[in-house]
Image (cartoon, rainbow, N blue to C red; front, side, top):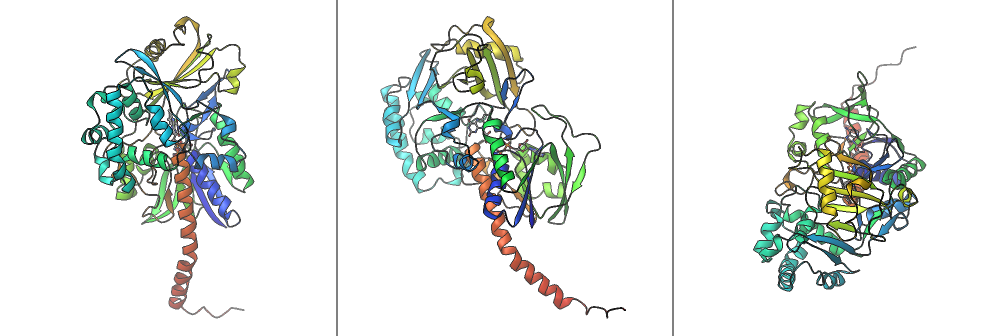
Amino acid sequence: MHRVLVIGGGPAGLSAAETLLRRRGDEIAVTVLTDRAYLGGKAGSWEHPDGRVVENGQHITMGFYKELPALLARAGVSHLGTTASNHGRFIIWEDRDQRAHELHLGASTLRTLIDGFEYTGWTLREKLGFCATIARLAPRVIAGVPEEWDDICLSALCVEYGLPHSLFATNGFRCTRDAQLNYPGEISAYSMLMTIKKAGRDFLTSEAHFPGGGMSRIWWEPVARHIHRLGGRVVRMKRLVGLEHQGMELTGLIIGESQCAEHDDEPCLHGSERPWRGFDEVILAIPPAALAMVLERTPTLAALPALAGAAKLRPVVPLGLHVWHRAMARPGHRTVVAGMAPPLEFVVDNKPFYEEYADDGRFGACLHFVGQEAGYEDMEDEALLHRAMGALRRIPGYEHLDDAGIHSWQVVRNRRAHQRYWNGEPGSLKYKPWPTTPVDRLWLAGDWIRNGFDFPSMESAVHSGTQTAELVLKSLDERPARSRELVAGLRRRAPAPPPARH
Ligand SMILES: Cc1cc2nc3c(=O)[nH]c(=O)nc-3n(C[C@H](O)[C@H](O)[C@H](O)COP(=O)(O)OP(=O)(O)OC[C@H]3O[C@@H](n4cnc5c(N)ncnc54)[C@H](O)[C@@H]3O)c2cc1C
């Protein structure tokens, strides 16, 4: 049996393990090691001691996601059955007229363009200018987005292609950019256009789907059970802290026992670090900041151009705020509200979506705000809460959610290496590694690994895991031939065996 070790229990690691087992479970033994008790990585969740479910971050799937729903289906989970749709409706607050506007997107690319025209947050001139820009850009995008466009920010490209200047000041434009969870600044034109291209090609609907809460429980645990059924193992609370190598060959891993099952971080248990050498191939499916920390112990590997980029990518710190409120928000309001004051620009009321909350009389609204911490690192949790709630109260249907009615609240700052987020900052593509590395037996997967789909998301993580697993399988197919040649060469050079002793 060939032994493949996958490090990381997020969407990429689980998808890599599942692909290997599904395709060659009879020949390959697969073990997943992950440093938390919960699975799903940044898309995971855990239970607060008082029973409330805490998500690492609000997650939404889009109509063009295909590989994630397919993975879930193989694990016996229905994507549509575990999510609720917003039916293409989004609410955007526009500062310039101090009003909330509804954006309703349809069920096809054409329908979306037509429906987008009804958005009242932009003037007719702006909408016509927007369409003209899209029409000018489309042929370039269809022909292939040039990689040099990674050095240009989206806004600069939009200026070049004639987007009306007034649109840059709108929250409709800002939210489209910031919804990529980037620095609350500019994003790579390449990254954005590759996403649009992918979304356009695989377009099913503009609906957003909201998972029914406790993502680890509803999605990632069933995927782990499926991996077990296929013959694989998922081992928790094991953290990779270093690599062992001889020249360009990976010979071992240094693994320690994690201390913290959930969100917070602590060093591994004192004295628990041990070498782990029982593998033939290793797939690292961990975030860039975590990989950069692991490589610190092996300067030779850290200096390899193929891996050095991990330390150069500038991660961002996603910020989440959960507010459990006694009063009910706008009934039946199943959507995202966007365009609120940074840093927490987006909010979803999960009361109608989460099974746990829907029947819990203690809460009328279960609000989940998301954004980026950059520029607001020194703002106290309490100040963040008041700022976010103040911005929300301007939206019709949420005016009555006063601070007195707050049942409980929690800020989640994803500051640790395993939680930070890489995204398409202009000029960063050249630092993104490929799934194959120059180190023999070492492979990479994850939403930040070059995988042809540059939209850091659960979908691209699942895609990357599958892609890396396929590459490992291909190399295994080629390897016996290489090993046969090697063995034949050694035999030719080997001295004659000594005479047998009696
Ligand atoms: C706040 C927030 C909101 C988001 N919203 C959306 C959304 O709406 N839609 C969407 O599609 N995507 C969203 N994402 C992105 C999505 O969560 C990620 O793209 C996806 O989880 C990446 O998967 P991954 O497997 O590549 O990495 P991760 O999810 O980061 O998984 C990495 C795994 O490796 C483990 N690990 C890390 N270091 C080590 C180590 N040294 N040893 C062992 N194990 C280790 C971690 O514990 C984790 O299990 C959001 C992310 C955040 C943070």
